[in-house]
Image (cartoon, rainbow, N blue to C red; front, side, top):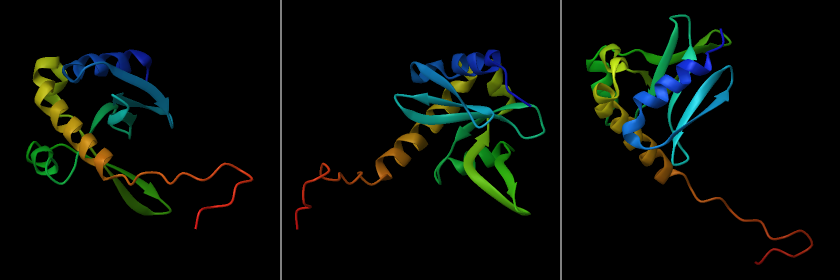
Length: 131
């Protein structure tokens, strides 16, 4: 089931405490980014349209303590997971209630962004590699 743009707009409104959000269609759902970093995805995994917030090892216990479901999917009979958890139900009611959860998602996105290795630059074609 495709997620409607109205839900993406509403989720960006909920996450507005982080600054300007950008929602972009991806893989039948949406990705939400702030300053070029992915903080959330929108997908329907059979339980209705859901806002899934980015987590890391520090924030995961807080989402689990709230009873939030982990983003999981099946591949060739095996269950796979991603570092996203459903937003708490009460946080879906207002930007103020979402703000602390949004901050956790942004912190996880920042941590993931700083862990990525710098891309190697290849020399222009026709030039020998320095060695």
